[in-house]
Length: 471
Ligand code: NAD
Image (cartoon, rainbow, N blue to C red; front, side, top):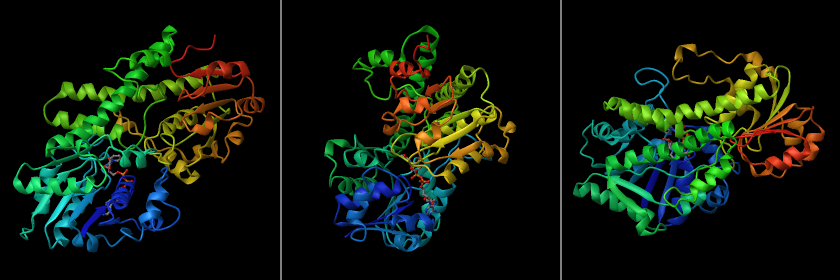
């Protein structure tokens, strides 16, 4: 029986390994992590992450051929294939701070694999890493020269949070990059055989190592670029009377462009887009390509601009101050169907409102109060002025309340900001909400989930991204 071990039981490691276990009953899969609470949660009824369909997949194979453990070294030593799916956040200090990927976790995982291995292994980069990382990993794995054959593969993950199970079940493609040597290609074939249990052959792409590593960064950069492109258009729409939804529809009908990922919004979030673009910017700079670096940097700059523009619109619409006014923030997760708040635009919007002394009342169906407060206590990195970072004042939390009901959040509020496109926000009784608010009642739809005309008919003063302003 082939044994797989995955280091890192996070948003990627957990679901991807659960899918492999489900589709490959002949393979034993152990997911290991240094975090005891995370592993305990994976072994309980309350999984550590919210992802539609994940519970069923995990429950159907856990204890059979899927295991979660903190005995990292033991399971790595026993495995034939070791996936590494640890976090690769942006470096916060030292060389490349604010842009480069922090590979500390990766390096320590690689050193541990080298130390505990007694048999040949295929080591798979599942985390998103800078192009050429495999070269460094090879050096680390072979540093103690035990005569073990390590083959490194790049197999980046393209799942999107909120639709992870669907994406893993029917991936657009699986990408495997390996060395072009006979041994490298043997390793590629071995990993291909795992995916071939359920992924059609024409969807499994094999490339050289560097193409696979770079493709992941490129894919995220292209996706984020589409969002920044439509968001940039949304600003122009507001200045000219064009409607961004109509523009997106017309543009997306061009088969060369296509309709997906053209929804204007308050800005993208999540742990990947910004981090991976900053990483790409850094790689371009290190390779003497400042113009290319500048091009991709603009995708992040427009995203920051969009978030700031939203906050400014809220404050300016409400007679230039929100001081002492109650603002309901609907949604805190970075997108619907996840509890993940990493880099969520909600943090920037809340910071902006708190800075103008608003009282904010937040509701999100999946994010806990503790998580929100941890996020709001964090500093936002300012690209151009890192020296200006100030810790969030603890007194600001007196201005924040977290509630477990959208109606409660909106009660007596002067304004509402919709930050996450949760389906339930489309179905709320907005007449009831309006009746219980201060007047004039403002509605700022950061995801364009509501019908502007219907909301105006109820009586709201409405601002929707990229839509004609109130007459
Ligand atoms: P995560 O933070 O949710 O999980 C990483 C896990 O690795 C943590 O539980 C951490 O405790 C564990 N870990 C770190 N060092 C370890 C070590 N030495 N030994 C054992 N465990 C260790 O991160 P994630 O969201 O799952 O992302 C992982 C990687 O996948 C990142 O590189 C990310 O860019 C990439 N990725 C993420 C997504 C996504 O949607 N989240 C999608 C595609 C790719």
